[in-house]
Amino acid sequence: MSAPDHGNLQPFRFLIIDGDARLELSAVFEEAATARGLDAAGIAKQKNKPLRAPMIIVVIATPSANPKIPEIEQLLSAGCAAQHIQLACHQAGFGSIWLTGDNAYDLSVHAALGLDLNERIIGFVYVGTPPLNAAPRPRADAASITSYWLQKQDQDFAI
Image (cartoon, rainbow, N blue to C red; front, side, top):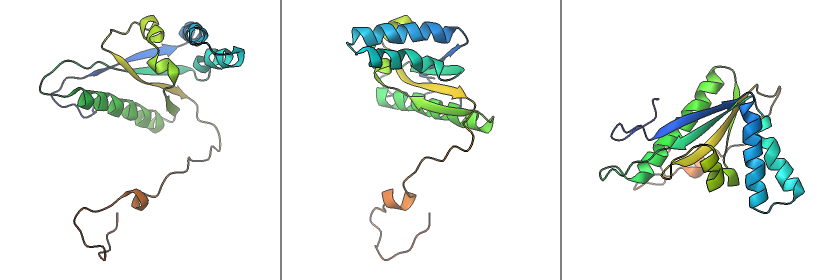
């Protein structure tokens, strides 16, 4: 709830899917994959997605038509809320992964989850026990993607 939020609009909400509700989401994903024309293997993969973790938090952007606050800022606020969920999961000792994919953009999935027409799925945050001895993901060195505007090249700055 501490995500940056220009105008204090709270342009996001969360939908928790756990227990047997994951089976219902599995059926929704299967139906959507079938409608998208996936082959049997693709349909099976989509059907299995909700069963990979004991809980899924669907982060939903709820942008409003506020003339002072652009929609992009509201979507970014929802993205920050998703990141904060991941940080909170990590702090509590859980693993999490933020996924999107075709289901996040499929209007039939939106309808099944009860989204309004203006709402968007920012991501499915899968939450569970982290794998033992999981190797950290390779990340770029911050210096390789950081530059300084209007500063001399010979200055040595540490990040």
